[in-house]
Image (cartoon, rainbow, N blue to C red):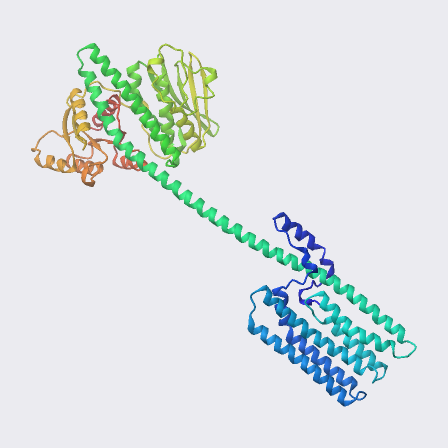
Length: 633
């Protein structure tokens, strides 16, 4: 019969098999239920049968002892001895086959088939021995002995394992047929009913065996299905691992591409800003020295083109940093007056040139956010407001609404048409104005407001726009209210106003690029300043060593952030302040946009400008530095 170690312990669990098969079928696995009626060799079944050989042999030994005990006084001695020798031969054959199987370690299906056949042969040999016991000893004892013998043989028939249903049927018939024949031929009144009961037991046993065989076949099919599923999962896992490895490689390649793009833009930022910076300075000098109206007009047009190129270049750099994830939030509480101060230095000269009023309101408020990003947003908004306003002015305001602050930029400019207001924050979108005064001053790239929206989204700050054509525009950025710190903040309205001349102002310029240094010196001289131009820290040390005692002390240092031989502008600042005092004003100029540079400039107490520097902004900042020095003096 079947190996009971492979059978379910409770038959009421068997209906669960179709549910498992449905789950496997949903995963694409189709177990072969023909296994339920096949003699297909199964390695696990074979291993299990041979593993239980010691227990089976022990059971047969105890059965043989029971037979000898029952029949010892009634059966002839020679008959008992002959049957015992046959039993010992069958028992020894099973031991020999089990040992050979343990040493063989079969690996192929055919090998497992041969070992199953060997098991069947030895099992049938044991069955034949028990059938001979009934034939030999049934008539020698009294009825109690005969009944005990029948029950003993029947129990071994039920419990005897077989690798197939056909072998099990042969085993039963071989044991039961002699038993039925002896009972029927007994001649007693109850012999025929007893024989009928044995036949009924045989039929029931065959039905139960068939059901168990079917259940075992289903379990075997599920086992094979599970193996198929495991193989399929292993294949899918390998494919998933390969896909994950490919995704990791792709991500690494994308990150490397991002780093390469960042390095490229950093190099481009430095290398391209240098000639733009020099061109801007030379153009302003040419415009101031022009004696003819046509030359002055040409210089003005060149200056406008350089300014447009500068604006586009700066916006592309900002957009590339946003795309590469190079902008990180540094949220803190800061006074809006500090942002106003920097905005005023940058835009007051531009507003002054156009005859516009640039006002700042709400200087006492503190904002919770990233001061650098807030300033960038306001810079773009104020730049647009000044560009598209011809009369009136621009108002930058900050007012509180509950636990929020509304940062607003108002202008009295040409406004935005209603149909364009939904698209002004899109990249490369430019409003087509019909206003006659707007066309020659547009010069935009369509990226300014797109950068504003990207920065606002990065900060999680809502941004809104309202505009009426020919009346003006207001853009609102909403941010949380910050907590004031115990420090005094100088109001923005106390800043110095731009000056037209730098007569008598002594300035040291340290710049390694020859064209930029010459352009800077020529421009400062045109503003009537006294200028010393140097190209490195080595020249700075030589100039300090060669200066005569009592020579005038410079008021201002304009220094590049990066200098030759690995030196930096910070070293020049420290060297000159050690020589002339900490009150020496410093303007640091750089061609790279780096938050670390801004932190370094704040630590040194100097202003940081990014190349290319607009000449009017440079002039306004120098004027502020002079007025600041005069107030301290």
